[in-house]
Image (cartoon, helix red, strand yellow):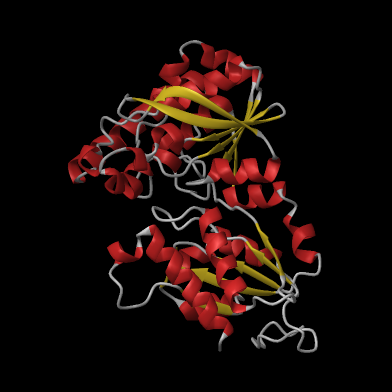
Length: 363
């Protein structure tokens, strides 16, 4: 099959017979499931007769928002609800998952930026304490293996809050448990490419706070290195989630993995894609050159061989780069003239997706 021949007719004109939809969430707007369902609705409106293609939707996440739902959907696990603290130490109801003897922890369930009102965001005060509460709860249930999604944090405390929540039990957890980190962030803990300088401004930090946070992280890393006799602060991913990545790497000997690839491994994506699929549709809230640096759509692209693959995203900054990378079609669902705050409304975004899909098949 010629993937560069972007005609809509395949298989002697009979049309697509099997389509796989595997999109990341449109962050702050629609979940992965909602994006997939909107695309599926557009496909069904395009072809409502008895010969409609089989449509398979796969919930996706790169380790950030929606990670828990995506992994539980793939691995058929149990959802556990607990009372824990958010990043400002307010009581909330949080969830994590258990699959056999493995816990699925999405740190944004407790330390998430989305849980904090914009005017209240302050990474000097925000704590990862609630992450420690989730891990402790699972550990006390007998869980000894953890998959931890590090996206969407409000914190920049290097995991100090998490460690404090564990008390002296962190030493037992270190001995008894294994951790795999799901994150696409490769930044170190400190310096101009570290957690504070790169990510803290998004969490409410001004220039003075950024420097204070970086100094605090460097001091914590120095003390920790003296204690353990090794230093993981320069390891790729140490700067993820405000330094939570560092805490897991340094204190729990965690293994860091690209979140999207980890999930694709769990759902045996190669098998699904090879099974007679004609078209794969993936996407995210906004696609640019960073998409091609390990984000979910690029990971999906790596698994596609003879199938056509479309990138369907809310916004697209560099269409040519996406096409050159191998996507057969690049679709921006948000009209150019639409203000971002309007496009971010869930119902508006859903309608934009459906309309864009219908228009693509009308070409």
